Length: 253
Ligand code: G
Ligand code: G
Ligand code: NA
Ligand code: MN
Image (spheres, rainbow, N blue to C red):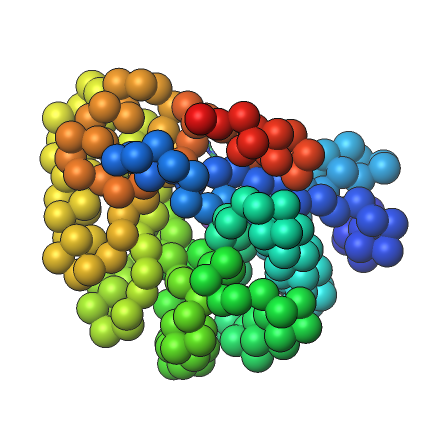
């Protein structure tokens, strides 16, 4: 199958690039960090969405190699921003399969050492469904990362398999409310109450809570009033390549 062979060659052909989307403190407006989002610009197919090629990479056994590339590129970028006087935490997405298959914590430790980056500049986002499989392996890797000082966020919260037991038993750092819950908070009283409840629950667990997919000033206003800690979404910035995001960061008041 064509996509498979093209994906195999993508790393070598340097067709991958990281885009970055800022996370903003809703109290101060300060940028707290960025999420790295992988982009594949295929010479044959044009831009391919990670939603399409990540599952394929997992099935092909390529996810470890790609995941390593993502972590290394993100850590190099965090170092570059730090040297430029922008102290920014860079977060990467790690899929369930990566936790099952490979030694994620060991890889992170190795990279942080190699680039002499302090762990507070790096974080990991994992989806709730990561806990469905190899729960013990995932749990011990997360504990190790947290011990090291790397923050760990639960991504797409509310959409996956119930992970409340992990939220309860692991000292996670952040909970990211999936954008599907944010989309209609202006019009749906039910959704608004649900998000309010998620914010309260996160705070009860000593987790920072971050709303994904913030697109309008009205959504921002509601989230601020709910006491949500951070926001991420097109209202602030789309995911951008390094050059334009650096300029965007430097031009903020
Ligand atoms: O930004 P975007 O629509 O393209 O992202 C689509 C999906 O791909 C999201 O669920 C996101 O978490 C996932 N994704 C983006 N980059 C990476 C990555 O580097 N690794 C993994 N495992 N998933 C990623
Ligand atoms: O699964 P994960 O949460 O990592 O992926 C986030 C996805 O949401 C990415 O595909 C990213 O490009 C996308 N995204 C980021 N901000 C917004 C937004 O404000 N609105 C919408 N619709 N999508 C967004
Ligand atoms: Na994410
Ligand atoms: Mn998410």
